[in-house]
Image (cartoon, rainbow, N blue to C red; front, side, top):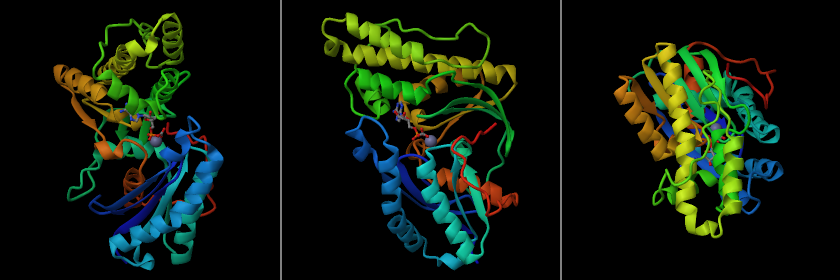
Length: 338
Ligand code: KG4
Ligand code: ZN
């Protein structure tokens, strides 16, 4: 038997697999088969399409992964898959496949919380050993979640705040649609914002003075819609609209994360999830953390959006701490992290 573990991620519209060395935390192979182009014509993810394509894409992806890692299936140390949260039909495909591999090889199985994968992704450093998870403030910003988590160590997670309505990524996608940009809106808005003025429009920063760590982005989206309706030529202001919207989202994320880290005396902030690849957001965090003497760590750029390397890393920690799951465990589309 080797130290290699194979992990599958299929919670939404990316079919992904990765192989990790559980002792060192090194990723040996990581493949993502994206369905974005497929869902783009529908303006968002269509669950039935996602599920069907996971079923088609997963077997050849796993075959390639096994070939790339140069190890026979029977020699893997264990298998893992995302257990939730996510789309039920999508989760089922990867989860059942991975459990099948574990059963047929009599190896342990690890059902992983997708959000724990995001949370740990800033610690994927391909070093010599799995790094200790230090106390820190984790901000997870994805298409489905906006969470502020106090992390005290591995599996010691405490929810401090979350969005009360739309997730940050969801807000980017909905505003992208309002502006006539292709799905997903996040990267498109970031691109257009580069040549825009972030102070051109004064969009709201919700729950700013409430003294809690919750977020709300649906009012911001509505404000963009009203602004658009009043503009005689919205397309002429596209860059300014994008830059101003992006500034409103980023500013409130940085402000609340900083306040939470300070109030809990946490010396580090980590940023993960799809929205974390936004460079304007990263730059704001880098600046704010530097001026408040906090360490800042973001997930590597290719591992911010959904991937299996982060699921493999979470499984490596679970394996190291002998936290294998029973095979009767099922998926949980509403699985909570804390
Ligand atoms: O983590 P992820 O791949 O999937 C979920 O678990 O939800 O996140 C996808 C989200 C989408 O809403 C997408 O618009 C957003 O991440 N995103 C971005 C950027 N790249 C992806 N948002 C802002 N700026 C970006 N550059
Ligand atoms: Zn995700």
